[in-house]
Image (tube, rainbow, N blue to C red):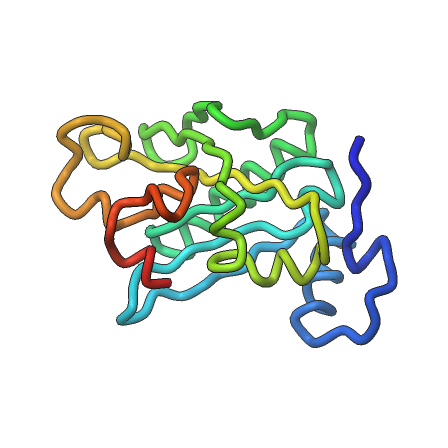
Length: 174
């Protein structure tokens, strides 16, 4: 099992309020969830911090849905991980958003600084594996499927792709 270099495992000096709050969540629950609100620049997202420290699981990230949904899905999967059900690239999970599946895709590290600053500050240095929880359009099609619904491509990034391979849009402006 890989080492953890987080702010709980190693002294990294002075901590801010966000660090202290995240430490409390990780100590109490095994992870915390950071929510980034949608604004005029684009959709919001949520991600876990602490699953690697507590369970040597990739952190979870979900984009483009309401934070009540993304946080609930991340916490549900966090509880499954805590009970021994691993989160791995390519997995399909069911029963998290109505009757729609979710596919887990490993996030390209080139996106970490853009989306996961709090997690990077918590862990200080690698490893920091992250999987994106990718949800389908209303017809059950994913971004890699032909004929996805209009506007769906902008709802969540294709963060498993390198930034220079990602389609133009709001996520490249983040």
